[in-house]
Amino acid sequence: MQTEILYRPAYAAARLVLEAGERVKAEAGAMVAMSGVEIETSTQGGLLKGLRRSLLGGESFYVNTFTAQASGAELWVAPALPGDMVSWELEHPLLVTSGCYVASSADVDVDTSWGGARTFFSREGLFLLRVTGRGTVVLSSYGAIHHVDLQPGQTYTFDTGHLVAWSEGMQYGVRKVGGWKSTLFSGEGLVTDFVGPGRVYLQTRSQDAFLSWLIPQLPQPSSS
Image 1: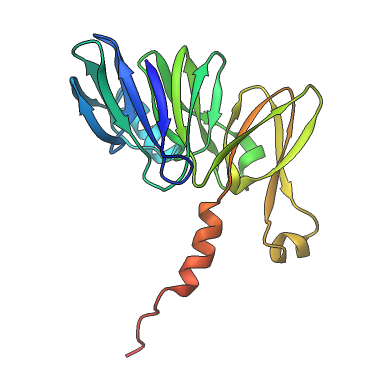
Image 2: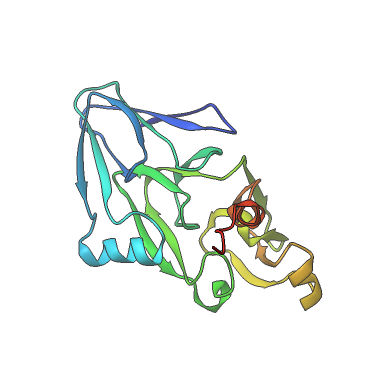
C-alpha cells in the first residue's frame, strides 16, 4: 500500500494506492472516494470485539474492508474533524487515543487496551486503542500533527487533550499540572509525563479546549 497525505495540515486526506487483491480496513464513514475497490462491512472479530471497540474505545462498531480489484486501485480516506493525518509503518504495538484511528493494512489489528489507573482521570478514560501487527496505520489529529522522539530516560510532559498516539512500553503517568488552583484555573488541567525511549504523536489543537470555548457561545433556550 502506498500512502500519500494531501492538503495538510488543516484539512488532510489520505490517498491509498493498492495492489491487486490488497485489503485495507477503515473506520465507518472514513471513505471519501474510491476507484477499482470493493467494500465489505463487518464487526472485525465478532460482536464482543465490536462492542469493546465502540463502547470502550470510542470507535465505530463496524469496520469497512476495502479490496483492490486490480493494481493501481485507489482509496481516499479522511477523518470527521479538520486537521492533519500521519501514516505510520507499524513494527511494534502502538497505543492510540480514542477517535484518532482512521485506516490500516489488513494485517494490522485494532483492539481496546486496559489503561488502568494511569489514565483514569485523563480524557481517554480507562481504555485506549491498541494497534498491533505489521503494515501501515493511518491516524488523524485535530489541528496539525507533530511527533516527539524521546531518548532513553528522557521525560516529556504533554497535555492529555493533545495526545494522539505513542509507542507501547513507554512509561507514562497522569497528574495535575500543579496544585489544585493551577489545575482548576490555569486552563491546563491534567498532564501526562512520558519517559523514553519511544515516540509520541501530539495534535496542536484540543477538542476539549474547543468545546470549552464553544459551548458558552451557543444560544441558551428561552425560559418561556
